[in-house]
Length: 92
Image 1 (cartoon, one colour):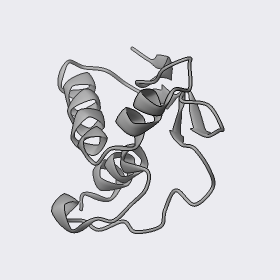
Image 2 (tube, rainbow, N blue to C red):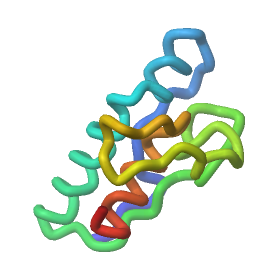
Image 3 (cartoon, rainbow, N blue to C red):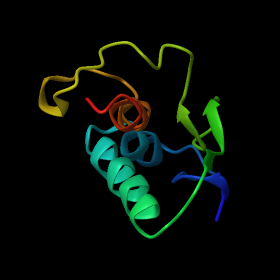
Image 4 (cartoon, helix red, strand yellow):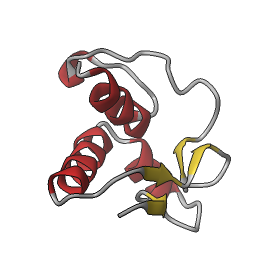
């Protein structure tokens, strides 16, 4: 099973949507999404976009790797969905 254009996002860019997509809680949401996908036998998961000016990407701009910490509470990342991907991919 393959996920094509997967991930969570919003097709509108309001203050609330931007705040939700960039909140630190999105790291946990994204980690749960991917762990559940793989636990249920899911294969390759193609996220919709790496970064874009809209809400569908892992990050809104190319600074996505700034502020990452393996400990979510210590992270200062602006794009926590990217942090979830990095956490799962590296095992940290």
